[in-house]
Image (cartoon, rainbow, N blue to C red; front, side, top):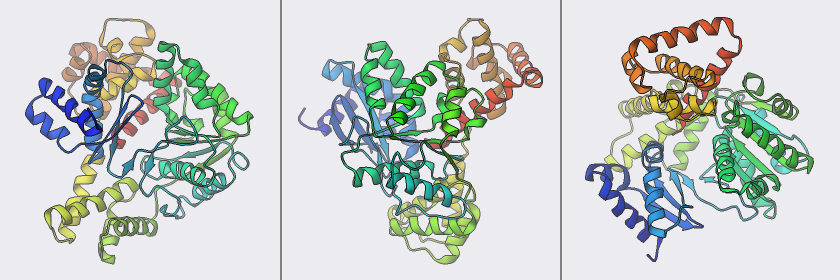
Amino acid sequence: MNSVQDIWNEVVRILSRQLTTTAINTWFSDCEPVDYEDCRLIIRTPTDFKRRIISERFRPTIEAALSDLFASSDFELIILAEDEEYEKNDGGDGILPEMAGYTFDNFIVGNSNKFAHAAAISVAENPGKNYNPLFIYGNSGLGKTHLLLAIGHYIQDNNPKMSISYIKGDDFTNEMVKAIKEGTTEEFRTKYRNVDLLLVDDIQFIAGKQSTQIEFFHTFNNIYEAGHQIVITSDRPPMEMSLLDDRLRTRFEGGLMADIEPPDLETRMAIARNKATRLGLILQDDIIAYIASQITANVRQLEGVIKKMTAYREIMNHEINRETVDRAIHEVMVSGDEIPKPENIIRETAKYFSLSPEDLKGNNRSKNTALARQIAMYEMRQLTNLSLNDIGKELGRNHTTTLSSIRKIEEIMKTDPDIPGIIRDITSNITTLSGKH
């Protein structure tokens, strides 16, 4: 195999032995192999939706195929989508993903985000000196990751010798567990503790994971005491993470807290116009105003509508009018408000309690496992349209047990002040996961 395309062709051939032709054509026909290096295969998919499906359903199969091809178990699949590019960070061991346009120049500033934007620029211009850590929080789709990456790219461009590491909260846990299992904890710690800039996206995913929080506490201290910069994003402020370690909460709140609110109409119009211009789409002011009036709380959805309309024009040669806009808005809103899948609810609930999905589906009756199982049932009742019978089947329980479990959680919420916070954290993790990919 002489090229990344050869490798990908061989992977697809192996997948064809296990999957139907329809599955291959649906999920892999338009995947583009990007690069192969250091036991890491990078592919790109045309949409976030396809990336999520491939990651959730086929990642183990693809990584197993790669392991078979190269007689090694240390393979990682990286899946990119849409504008996302893969770029190694020449300054350090971490990988700084480059999202096309995710720079300060392309960030639309309005009343809802100007404080966070100003703080991010200040940190980028004087890392480790002004606000440390910088903690940016707000709902999904408002631009937190944009500012996080903009800081990273600004520093990377202006201080190329600075080492940078970027990590998502849940990936920090996964890498730590892998390092412990493989006996490479020193390498793991070196990767994140000895950097000039640490960027952590979605830190809320480590709340409740005691071992991860201890490790991150020491990572934080090493970087902070060395006078180096830490930037963190979250969907909520530290005080609202009920299971966040008090030591971490104190450190997060000891820096600068910057929240991002949903943009006002004027800012939404500017965002829509900017995105359309970058995609070569000329829209009339009334169309821009209409889109901005319909999408009110999520920048990612606003950009999604513009991308949909661009696709209609380029692929289907459709005229851009009110009917086209309504269709694009409907499709984006439906996909954005997707009902969480039961397996995602079970996985996120189990992860929160440091358990596996199999633990929740099994017969372990320990207090911790039983509570997690009951909360998973409660979450499925709240977040999906599943019947009690269907919820029970997901966890190997009958109708009566399911109903009893849900009622028990409802009662506990009235008497145990910690349970509502736990459920709020898990719900946020589930909905954040559903809204992203």
